Length: 98
Image (tube, rainbow, N blue to C red):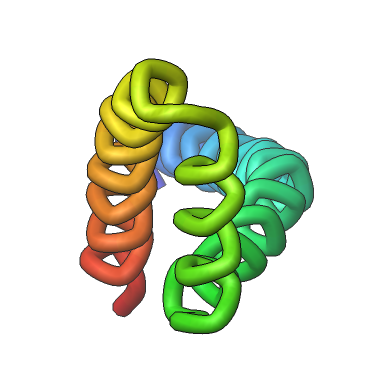
């Protein structure tokens, strides 16, 4: 083996070692991010269950109507914004799944 080939072999070994170390670091980072996002997934799933239950929606509408017309309009507009946001979050979550 020539000195140039030895140098290239050493360099290749160092690069392979660095690559393995970086892969391990990436795996640990993704694991940490996944554990943090699992809580968000549970919350989104709970909200999804609530928004699909017509009885709960009807009950909340009744409570809003009991609050009075002015307050009902204010709460309804806020609820529409929140529901739109939740639907977007749910659709993004479903789209990101493989």
